[in-house]
Length: 375
Image (cartoon, rainbow, N blue to C red):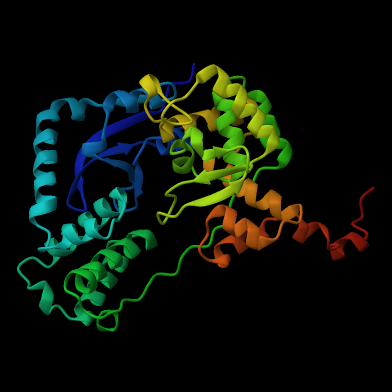
């Protein structure tokens, strides 16, 4: 019998913030489970997955990982009090160490909770690294050299670099009120990875393999409307406008509302689901009428893919990619797809032209005219 892989949980500081490191050897199945833990991220400098201490829940981590791995949490048990103290101290420092007006301005601008948390963490790092210096007197050259050092010597990722730049620019431009031309930093080139897409047959197999009516409704709605997980859990019963055959997606990314077409088949499915579940506050509710969690939706999609015999790593956002790609393949105008997905720029939507089968099937490959010498 094969022994389960070992995951060592270790408390450490990362970018000045108390975190729990998840250290383990590479196993695709384990990595997939780790990614399902809310708020977990990969650190290139630590070469480990990590989660903020204040978000860490040992019971939840154990329930997700224990079926496939052995969790060594000795370090966590021995330092529980220390971690709590660090966590409380960190919460106080996050506010007290920030420049005057920084947090207030973030809140006035109505930035999301996640963005505020990231900006605060990176701004604190910036302050710590220039300890003793007057931030208002720093030159653009000094800050650019600082970021260059982080890239070359600390090997920060392009995403971390962008967040750091955004946090710094927010201080100088929004809090101090300086003009944008006064403070400009070079941006890293964004990685342009093509989205992973399933075939229509594979999506259909996932839906058919799901017997639970609520789960089937969630998967069908994610795919048929191209929804993000957060958009699905924020839906209310009143957002399904059957008379107009549309779904209202409220306060989506960028705090924008939009309408997407509603499938007649999915409407029938939702009606059957509604008769049984009778949701009150949210279209999809958890225990005691609470809002459904993103982790639950992730597990639903993964289980459906496994039951359908799909070996690839499938997550909810793939269904959004499938929605866009399959629409494009059946001839839907890119401008409509852009509006339904809620993309501000058409360039974001155009990435699906690179994965659509239409762009491959209409051309003949030159090698098809050659004799390959097969018997």
